[in-house]
Image (cartoon, rainbow, N blue to C red):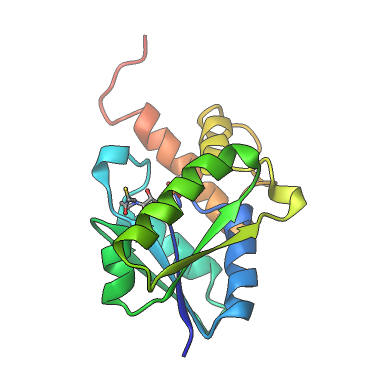
Length: 169
Ligand code: PNS
């Protein structure tokens, strides 16, 4: 069985990620979407919230499983017996970092290979950072994320920007 891992921060998941998940799920037997549990990256959403959003929007894909991991990706790939890491390339600006990541992982364990899929053109500009930037100003994020997640994202900003008892100056 060909098991692949698609790791990321998914803070939050976007149409770009969903496109990658749907396409990857057609290539491999099982796709494990693994959310990085790393508080150092200061994520907007907790790992539980990110997993839950991913579960919701991939429920139509029977060979896709959502999990989370701590520590090194290569260790987690080995732990779940995944021989393939899948990453998306949006533009040449992604390439340098992704190449370094793939090569580092391969030095550590040459049995695990990284496969790159090019992002569909319509999502080439899209990132979780863009979603957060637009949502933080209450802008329209309907082009970036599924409708069922929109309210949760706006709600998170309402909580973050207006914590209970905080005064607005
Ligand atoms: O969605 P992202 O933030 O681009 O995903 C980056 C991710 C999670 C793939 C990367 O940061 C990662 O693998 N982190 C785990 C630690 C690790 O293994 N680092 C690479 C070796 S230095």
